[in-house]
Image 1 (cartoon, rainbow, N blue to C red):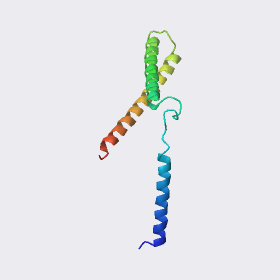
Image 2 (tube, rainbow, N blue to C red):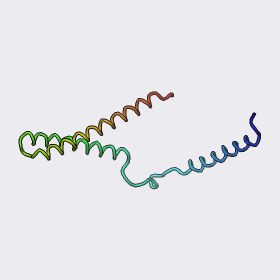
Image 3 (tube, rainbow, N blue to C red):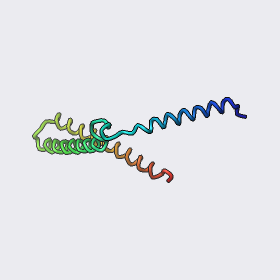
Image 4 (cartoon, rainbow, N blue to C red):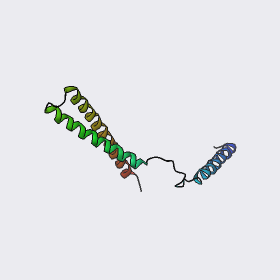
Length: 108
């Protein structure tokens, strides 16, 4: 059986939480109040552009190494940068697909 004092304590806690949430809900960000800086979409776009640039540079460096235009050290560094970028892109893709699948599983 639930004690009356614990019920009133729980009700007061709920009321306080509700008031706090109402106070937070009233403070919406206006366009002038938004923090300056790039949006998430801009950051994602820039990261993708950097990844594509790194991959293309690694490919060009590998071709130059095969033609004997650059040394082994430069070719290895470009290949390692290429490999690291590809692994990062694949990991991000996997996370995006996982998040998308999780959204599809959500009940409506």
